[in-house]
Image (cartoon, rainbow, N blue to C red; front, side):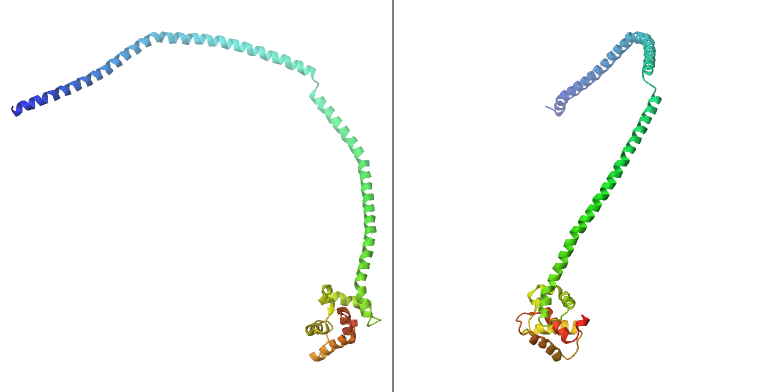
Length: 263
């Protein structure tokens, strides 16, 4: 078989397929055209049928609107007339608002005056009662303060009694006021055992007495051995007391140096 015959046989089916596709596409397009033309025809016919109907409906609507407007206006007029009649009736029944306001103001003024007249005696009575209570409270406070003050003075006196008695064991003519000054100088140190007594056997304690009381407080000057001897002299004076009272010790040092008056 020749090559030309083979080509002819191969091309024929392909050509037929292409033609069939083209025809199908043209038929599809023709279908759309026919549908469009049919739709156009239907629209035209519908328009012809409804044009007259629309105008007729508009005309009927205008007539109905006119009738409704007349009815509404008539109803509105009747409502206004009824409202006016009701308002006049209410005004005739109710009293004048201006007169009522004046009456209420007069009543308020009258009540205010009565309240003021009642409040003055009550306020005066309350002031008198308050003054009486204040005076009684003041008197009560004075009465309470008097025993407290007496107790405080007694307690204060008791605080110094033991010191005065101890000092007068060495100086019967000792002035209680001077002893009180020494006690106040020592202050809270007397609340501890070490502060309350002087330990002559302790050299550090003797040096403390020498520096803080003899030199600093009394203002005694001199060589250290001489000052130490002054402290030891008081230790010998109080040798009978195993526990030597610091207040008495300081008193005797000041007396020996003639410094009692300067305390």
